[in-house]
Length: 65
Image (cartoon, rainbow, N blue to C red):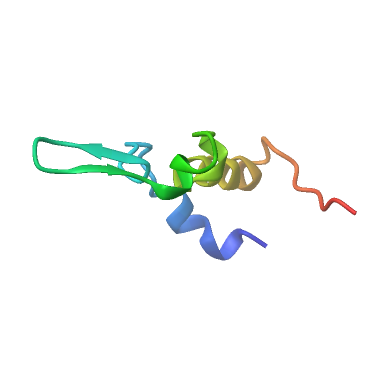
């Protein structure tokens, strides 16, 4: 299921730029983060952590229902 995304999933360096970037000229916060309480698993970096966990076998994927 995730195998075709393996290369891209492991390219994430967990820098956090997908969720927030602050400089003197730029103040950007991911809108998903802003509207979900800031839980890591709701935005890109957290989703990639879950995907890589499944690909490495550290997490087990299951469907609910």
